Image (cartoon, rainbow, N blue to C red; front, side, top):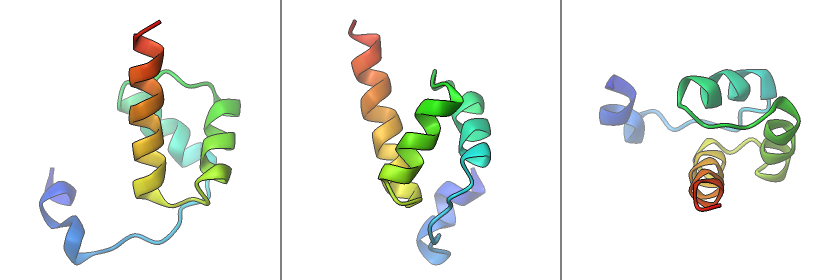
Length: 65
């Protein structure tokens, strides 16, 4: 995507809106319910890179069950 090519030029600040993260998770194929997303976003303080890393690690862990 365009964002992936240019993300280093436009750093994101924290995004605390868990509804936006719920939509992102769903569109990205992550299987988290809204309560889980709320906890992840709060725990990562809305930092996009940290949230994505957590989503990816948790998803890998869930797929190993």
